[in-house]
Image (cartoon, rainbow, N blue to C red; front, side):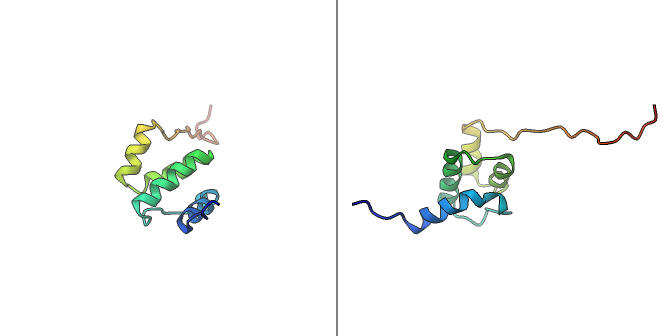
Length: 87
């Protein structure tokens, strides 16, 4: 018989689909933050917004993991919506 999942594991699994609603992850302990990041990657839920949320923690382990996996934020150019110059 399989042992039940830990409460921490269940909490991480339930946080993954809701990560875009978080504004700060820096309060999480390092081991939970790393597990959350890796599970987010495995679930295919890492977006630019969520990546920026992990980067904003400033935790060296997360930053080095992102660098080791060569994950980069995609910079989308913002085009002006109207032209102020007269042609």
